[in-house]
Image (cartoon, rainbow, N blue to C red; front, top):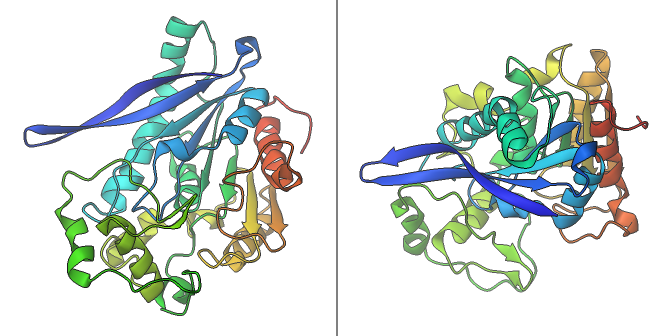
Length: 318
């Protein structure tokens, strides 16, 4: 597959400038393109990058008739979720609808209607994908992969979750962790605390995320009380015109409780919105990160992408 980068938004911080970039993954058969799939990465709004869209997911999206796009957003906590991840994701969405089709036709001879757009995302990126339902031209469909929603629920605000593996060494000092607030301008990419070699807390940002989630304070410094309705899709999910949505959720997820996907699915179904829920028995948070397309565990991802394709008129399955 070929990919190309475009800057969709630039933000000035004094003499410095942060370029927000989207990576556009082009299918081999460009004649089959019928839509744009915009992806938002996970990482608790604090870590992660647009490079986290797995190759298997890109292949499946391309094969399904989509130009796959993965976009940056500025990371908290030196910017709020509303001003960083949400505002930048909205900018990426509007750019993908309005400007990307022009670039695709001019530079790659790909003709696609920008209104034929779908969104998807992992974890907090799943929540961002759902928020695009608020736009004037909402997505044709959404794929929520264990996404953030119902952010006021006590689940996120208590220190009862066990997210660290047994035998974890003592956490870094508070002084070390607080250095994350010196990171200005906000970065657009940061390594997650769990990598291929296990837990890694060598940076203040990684340690900040792990400790705040464990204490139930992960939203305290990044979401103001009067901003929840703008960063949480909970109220949007009550709308009868919400886009068709496919939820994938692991039952053993300790970062996002499975009940939230069940609530959202039930809410949409009650309002007559086409919605599907695929519960992955024993699935943990990020269970699909290293899957290959021929792995049996990739089935819910493939079904979700087929759902997206159906709703832009590409596929045949529901």
